[in-house]
Image (cartoon, rainbow, N blue to C red):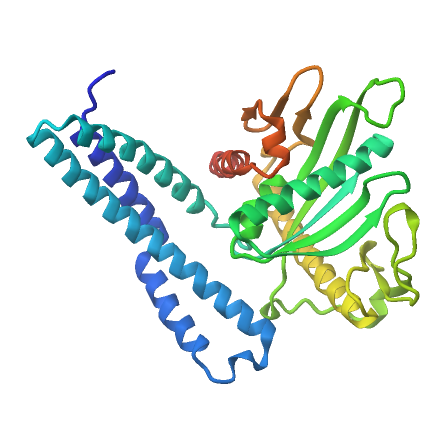
Length: 371
């Protein structure tokens, strides 16, 4: 095993850390923590549970950011001391421990570096994710349900709260569509790289001849609106339909018309909600998602205008962004970043951080190239 040049490696760690610290703006983080702590200490904070949740969530996130930065700085200092002791006493065990910590610090800094790339207009928002089955019949509906489970497991691994807002079940198996919220800061910036068309290749469990089937599902990710966004929607621009919620196989779940479908007439955007118990709750949830989609549509129109002024910049994501191949071999491959993994079961169980990190880096590089 080649001898490690610890002084050079530690200098490189410090240089990476310094660049991350500069981008993170530690003083601003501390200022935010002080302001949010003051807001969180107000006696009547929980009179408005939604606002209170938002404040405490932001405070927790900023505190975690600061703690992460300070912990990494301390670990680099500790590594330097460990190396000095190990080399001074010619202690092979200490140097072996230092080598392991060096690799762990490289990984931790790389992960933190990805977070600093989340600087888009809405990246810090919570996310609303919608999955829709595409071409492929019952296999596509089953694939949509597999993707829903994958993202919910990913959120669970990170301790991010989620809420399924709407599920539309297919007749035989799986889902026509599902919509859920990920209630964590930067959920939108993180998950927005998952938006696009996902492709599954496998031996169909629904084909009695055991033939290989290709199916597709679409993933949409939008930022959750905040009260300060001021997306006003005139009542005469919305058509409201109410109906009974349904479960798997088309079975009726509710005996009352509690499910709500909102249609935004000018754009044709349709939002359905059926997972809350009352029509009022479903309508409020549907309105929140509709406002979020209109907010993103407004942003996309502004970006399109800027792009038209700048000329044709080839930085599109493409329709098919990832393939999940279960037969004749096992492979999940992102077609934008070229990142691939052979353990398909782990990916479908929510281990998608490497794909997300690669996507965030790819997007940042694409933006830099466009500019």
